[in-house]
Length: 125
Image (cartoon, rainbow, N blue to C red; front, side, top):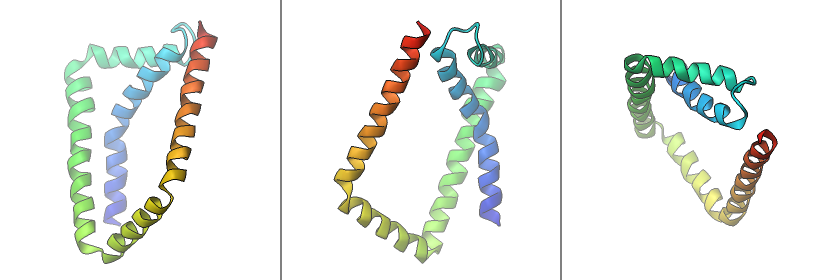
């Protein structure tokens, strides 16, 4: 139960930074007079107008808190749970035995993502 509460708290703490980063991306995929780029621009302007809150708290302090608390939970879990260590080792062996296939899959997905971004760029120009 404690891990679930920590996970929920971490999701809430990291959400403002994810919203900001997502807004940066959405603002670039189409002209700002259209939605959702217009809404993304408004979110970015809100962050820019409040540098102490937007930058220092929402984009630095809260993600740093998630990083530190998450690392602590993971380290404690790693030290206390033998099943986690065994499962991780088994997963790494599987990944190692199928590394070439995983690289092909990763490159294929990356290429698809690049083509989607380029297509969106071409369509918005």
